[in-house]
Length: 170
Length: 179
Image 1 (cartoon, helix red, strand yellow):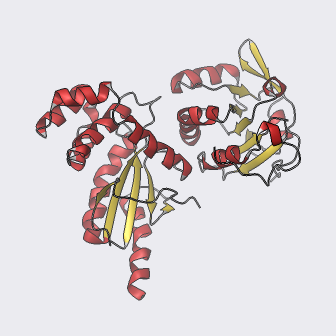
Image 2 (cartoon, rainbow over the protein chains, first blue to last red):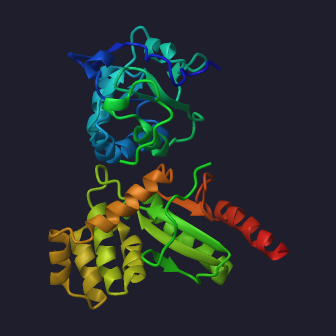
Image 3 (cartoon, rainbow over the protein chains, first blue to last red):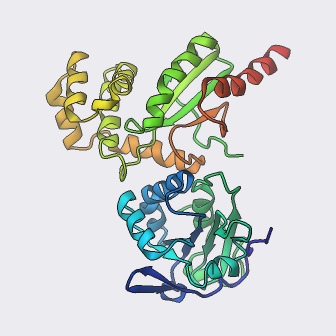
């Protein structure tokens, strides 16, 4: 099984389709912390719980100024139907063609099954991975790890040099 | 393994003795079908262990998919402020198929509480901060769906089937007995 990219690694750039006629690039969000949630598939019961949960927690993520992106190998029309069904208020990106290329670049692709791992990344304001976690494929990882990471992110003014050492209760 | 980050306090809704060897904390949503299915199972677990298990219920409404979950949680808190939380809690789960404002008002009325006070409490979101506080504490503890149970502060990752809950509780009783 591939290792997912770890803290300190620059987050690989990507541009993916977010709606049938819109693209979104990681660099569009530079200056903000970005939460990237790779997950295996729309509609599977566990993913459903995970995205529903993150949808509810979105105000907490936004309180930290963070943007949340969901990424799976499902196509845009599938994402569109899934987002409408679950009333999701954050974008789902289609890692569809070439299939799984972005997941692969983060070490979060399952070759055997042809789907993304259930992997979480918090990318800092400078585009560097600050925290990452791969959950067992059948276990919804919850959001506690993401919130812990967002709280430990250095503030903009003191972000240079001591990413892991500062701890801010917000 | 995820652990409960918010300790049980007197402001929680608690059934069972404070010195029970096992505390089972449930994070639940009144509109969640799985929570509805778990409700009689939790009752059966309480009967099985009697006063050896203390039950705590905290709110975890998934409002984007369950439009009645928040008002149900706030209504349970409203009843709780009058010391009737568990009756309201049971009433909601036992009538979950008809959950909505008419049911909540009917249940409050059946408890002899004021329906107009409930209307006022819901309109002013009087109990929303308590519900949100439960929710956020659950998030920090690694609640990853509903229902999520914590048995003596450890998240129960097996199913909520009776046998799985019993199997998770029993070791805590034996551990205590050996002391």
